[in-house]
Amino acid sequence: MRTICVMNHKGGVGKTTTAINLAAGLSRKDKKILLVDLDPQGNIDLSLQARAQYNIYDAMTGKVPLQQCIVHLAQNFDVISSTESLTKAEYYLYNQKESKMLLKELLGTITGYDFIILDCPPSLGILNQNALAFCKEVFVPTSADFLGFDALKKMKVIVTKINESYNNNCCITKVIPTMYDRRSKICRQTMEEIRTEFNGQVSLPIRVNSKVKEAPKYGKSIFAYAKSSPGAEDYGKLVEEVVAMNITNVR
Ligand SMILES: Nc1ncnc2c1ncn2[C@@H]1O[C@H](COP(=O)(O)OP(=O)(O)OP(=O)(O)O)[C@@H](O)[C@H]1O
Ligand SMILES: [Mg+2]
Image (cartoon, rainbow, N blue to C red):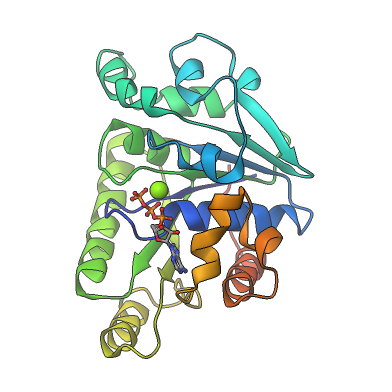
């Protein structure tokens, strides 16, 4: 089972979009997927119309067993949602002894999936530290511009520090340039810089595409909403790359 957190402390870089479309695309390739929303914005539930009765915060606080939070969305595709109540989790976790290990304890009991994918909030708080303590891989969506590249380099440092703190060996295994506009000089230049710094880990870019932006309104992945769009083509290629990766770093 591969455990992947989709993370970047920079906001609005396409984390949720990537987590959803990667999960949906992999499930269509016969991979059994659990997508977990760790962001109090709760965008996954809304974007996929999961309408979960219980969410990850309910499991974290012991209100219900984790299994009760799982919603079966489609073939091979299960989801655990989040709500704004997860903002309280930072405070709740702060007062727990093993505060960075709670997610690992909960999700570590889950079996039967090929991938667990976590959509993480744009922060460096305790929730993301929990995600990094559980997962073996980090996928970093990034904008291909100056500030995006700066955040990406910081992510590398953060992952190293968390590994040292929790004795984990989580690695950045994919850097995903998003909202790519090939007509923009800064995008092309930054793409080259990203490839130089993260040699071999960089995916093909996901182009800016209005269909990608529209799909959540209809509760669909890009594959269900516009299967012939550039967005579906790009996320389809990412799915193929992810399946083809030779990963030894699994749970
Ligand atoms: N390839 C794309 N083309 C066009 N719009 C996109 C693309 N990818 C993402 N978007 C849009 O950009 C916005 C931000 O994307 P998203 O919510 O996935 O980012 P995020 O990193 O999860 O944000 P946050 O940090 O708030 O969690 C959304 O409106 C989304 O629809
Ligand atoms: Mg998000």
